[in-house]
Image (cartoon, rainbow over all chains, first blue to last red; front, side, top):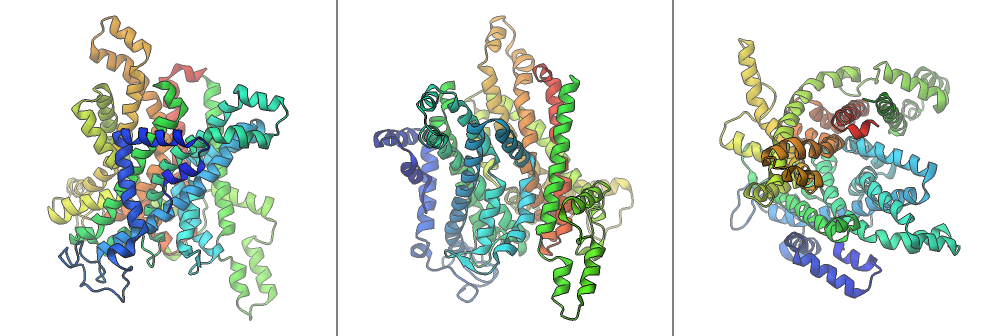
Length: 312
Length: 324
């Protein structure tokens, strides 16, 4: 599991000194610090769930009774087949975070390519790409995702696994990716459009640099900051979409994410039975992670987005 | 309002709706299970019978243009095919019968959220750094990070299963014959409170964040300083100068966000067993009832397109610069 901070280190071409000062400026802000702390906590949970709560409990390894309230043995109670909610929630961290991370990669990749190509190429290609982007921006993409999920599952076949991730989850990753790239494309297009007019791009063009060279050497390094800030916000959205998709029954019961746990809680009517311990832990985790990423994303956006900086 | 602006917006909306129908057409062809594939599995079915089926369903003709024209034509006539489940009832009928409850729930929630959210955001931005701003901003961010259904489950736990203030599911109490319309209305209202509160609370977070940043941005404009310098009272500066201008970006953002809000509304209905499009969506998903899913997609997308069109018209009325 790579944290966005780590991705940033790897991707930004700037010297290390500037990197350090960015982290320091981030920590100096209360929202940046809070976001970072919560995030590190969940990354640790996702990285070593076995060390904290043992292996993921299944129907056969469950030890508790049906829907037991919290006790010393089960600090967060049990579900309808006697599994510890603490165990499930901690293991859910990895699944939710990995799905969110992969979906973010796809989203930012599609949005980045469409936005940068559109902004840089201009003309007919740009207006066609932006028509498509606007279309996806207006569309209730979640409903589209609901229809796409079973179709994609049919295409790649269900039940097997790719790289240790079950295909049901891969389907969610793909569906989130292809339905939520539109706002990223819009933001990056605007940036590419303004970069294109800058003198250094003109100079490169005058000395005979090719389009690909200009995009790689002059445009990309200047939008990396924007991409990072946007990716953090996209991650928050991806976790929410994954949760909602799992909640309506598209998740994988064998690799329960937080959304899948909430779906199971809804199916047994936990809220009606007063079994708060079933849905409050995974729910709180989702809210905390989305909250942390929103804080971090806004802080990064303030620090890195050139338009915002100018306004200050 | 300039007619050119209106014509352009309507043309755009028409194009978007056409694209939506096109997406639906492509999805219909990509869906698992065509009649001939199912027939071909049976070795006793002769090639002639398969050919007859192909002709009967019109899939012997080329995809483009014949099948596409037939599909678009049928869609505009309101023929969206038949449900796989629900004893093959027409999709239009199935979707139509679930439309009312969703409109009621969602319309009420949306109105409440716009009024409260915008007022809260405007006040918080106006008194930036004050108590309302700090508390409101924190609460808004948490509400914004919360999936709607989680909010719904929490409200259900507190106000229905613990305090027993409100009923926990459905639109009316099951098996109760209402003696008078008034009694029916009271029963309906009691069932409405929690789901509407969920939708409204979920939206208030978003709207107040939008309105707050919009007000703050407007307040730094020079005409506000001018207005203050002229000695106009603070409340009049807010009402007459800042608010109308801060409303502009908020109106269009609310419309753009509608597409996302729809997702949340679906899950709220599931939590409260509200007999609307959301519950229908999840039921259709469970039984893989693709025609119904596509019908819902069509109805929801077209509604969002029209809402955006409406917002653009309001925008044009509010902001004279757009008309040019």
